[in-house]
Image 1 (cartoon, one colour):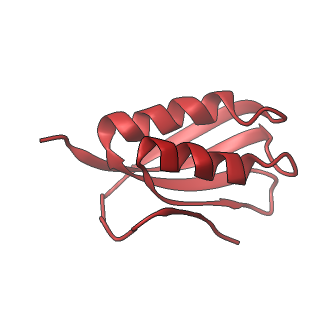
Image 2: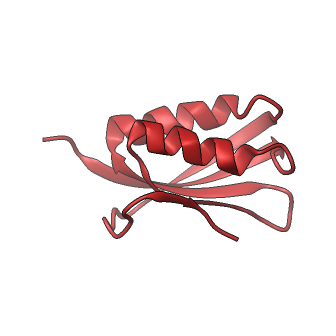
Image 3: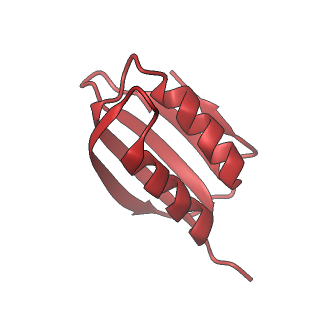
Length: 93
């Protein structure tokens, strides 16, 4: 059985105004990851990803490349306790 994990991501660079959240949502859903993504006031994007370790790792790798019009400078990853409380991956505000 695969291990379920959770990670809080903070993505820095040109990540707002370039469809990063919607593209992250599409990628997360494709990988079977649940959670959410949102813009922060400081110009970064924050995401909480939950799921099987290999799927969350795949989303983290995707975030390091980013959406087509974005430029990712850094992705900070903080491990969190897996809650299992998300049914899908949503853009939040």
